[in-house]
Length: 112
Image (cartoon, rainbow, N blue to C red; front, top):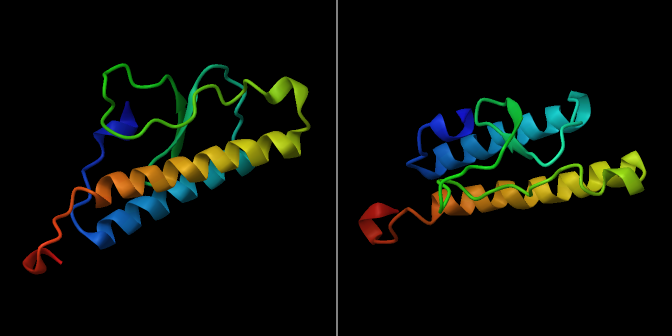
């Protein structure tokens, strides 16, 4: 999967740039993309791209997993409400990824 092939951010600036790129990709997906595939995950990529793909099979996954099944609730909801639901799950995933990378940093005085 392309999302997993990206280099791991090593500084706070790199984590922020990764976050910004993934966020831009998710915004593109939610505003211009066609999200009609079932039982898949929406991934924002650091290069401002996005993809809808199967969840990672390895356990534990390298990165936090986005919500599975972006279309589970789509049939019984208005499009605006569904997009809001996907956006909320996407925001949570973005924060999870940023904190995952941030947790890898040391907290010693020389490492700040």
